[in-house]
Length: 94
Image (cartoon, rainbow, N blue to C red; front, side, top):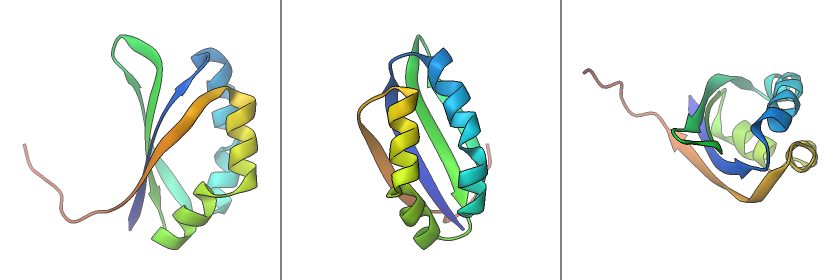
């Protein structure tokens, strides 16, 4: 299992979210298994997303796709997103 962590700022969360949701089918077709969406406390336009992928190669291909770039531009993503590819090593207990 591979993970993709994305952090970016958007111009307007209310404009960004519908475009993000519309892109879900493309993510799923590319091997995304879902994820968790976060907004920074007190800064609603700072977004962090942790996606789960079938494998690292599929996650990397999707992150570099023209489809994703176009969706991000349409959604109002500002600047260059911070992207990290992660391998899960263990589940932690509280």
